[in-house]
Length: 187
Image 1 (tube, rainbow, N blue to C red):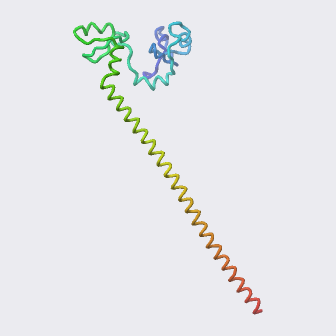
Image 2: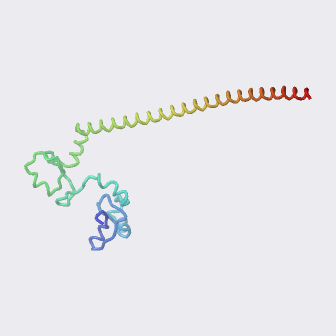
Image 3: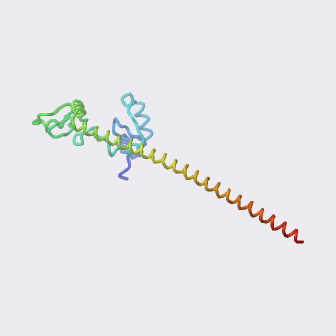
């Protein structure tokens, strides 16, 4: 039961109901009834709701948006500790020189060498995948060409066998005719 995802609003009311949808904005599950309310409320009608099955696929790789200690949204980034901070975490990082807004840190990260290295790695992987696809297509063409060539050889051998059988048949028929004629003449 620990892997079940329950409806957040119902749990708040001490009602245990399984969630059918997950809101990626609120990071909360919703049963069918609460989903309808969530979609109709002005503040949340444009939120992205996904199925629980889809959420289970992505929850292991999703990036936390809120501080686990304070439950508040991350707004800042401490370069010294390489950590995202909420407004309450800032007090613990007063002595840190490089506390910047999270958006600015994200912009800088895109320009960093680590990001460039990751991009190079991804591009290299894409090239390798492309080469694998080309190799597979080439192998498929080679197999098809081999199949056609072998099929042609089989047909040619069959024609030669048929020709030899026709010659043998004709010889046997001729021999039979000669023997039959001899038998008739000796009667």
